[in-house]
Image (cartoon, rainbow, N blue to C red; front, side):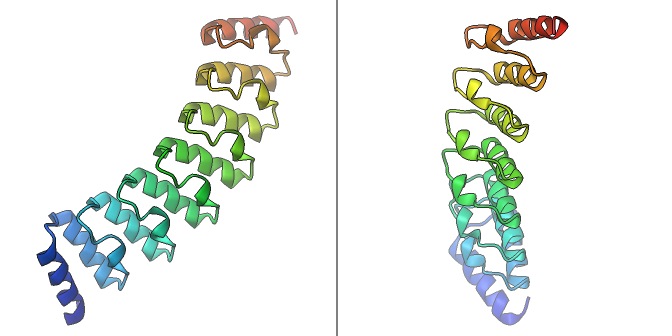
Length: 190
């Protein structure tokens, strides 16, 4: 570090009680002439600080995830979206866990209408089934309801992909394993 960087580093270290990994992330940022003010805060653990480093090194607008309530995995999903030039405002929200963010990001990257599943009541597996249906141009309106488990959604999606009439098992009261049996029977009789 040059003398100015070392002075900044020493001021930060004396002001806050950082652990060794946090100190290392701050030091790397200073050496690389990055704006460490985004993350040189005790509220961020070293994994979160590392996400800031990655983003700053790539010239990204890290303010999208400059919230200590985002864990490092959520920050990584927002960072990846920024790297891929997608509209992260759709999912850079605390109401989504990182697995939900993955499904929303993947949908945005594929150019599909994610508004059909960007809802906190859908878990990441349900989001995945809806996303896959949209990617395959299926009529997801048949199963994009939170009362269907992701396994049930998968069985309905498989049926639609096979060109089946899924009405006989289009009921959230039917267990997914039973749906699978019905689907197999429909495929045999096709």
